[in-house]
Length: 272
Ligand SMILES: [Zn+2]
Image (tube, rainbow, N blue to C red):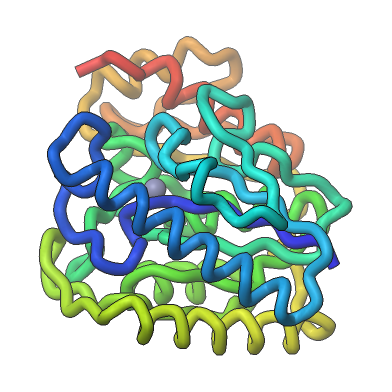
């Protein structure tokens, strides 16, 4: 059984502040260690349930947060950026399941630690008219390759977004968000136990779990916080304007929609 793990940082247990997730800040070194520990706990639980191969893709910011010197010796790590498929680099049809670890809610959701989608430029992203968090967007890429998302960990609204957007993944709530920057957090022993139970449940239900597949054509809609970002995204051939800050693109399949989404954000890196 081959497992693909995409690991973000805002939804790691204990993380509540932007200083916890920003390289260079005083607290970051501490929290990247906690992220590594939590990813290791997921790997350990998956191995206990019969996983034979585990690939972890570091999916937060510069994507080099997980400490290789403390990383579980039975898994392998994709580290660094940029990479073409970003948070899903390395996914293909050979995997049996995808796990999202440390995920967060889409922008505008209340009681959600550091809600956003990919970058601070995106006000919302929709696929075929439906609002998507990173779990929804990334889970559909897994679906394109025929792989179901079996597990999502994060705060209660990260889990809720993923359950709304995907075919029935198991959710593990590792902290209860109060505001964007506060949460009720648990000691790691409690979190580890919740993760162990969640992974077990996810692997048990795998035979009945269906990938989330978006049949083509696929409509991508992205609304940015500023109109200049929509103007820049319109440089992509085939991109159309919906309103001052919103663009739409009709892709032949989900892989193309995802690539266009990535390109629209890449064009806007550095645009204020
Ligand atoms: Zn994220």
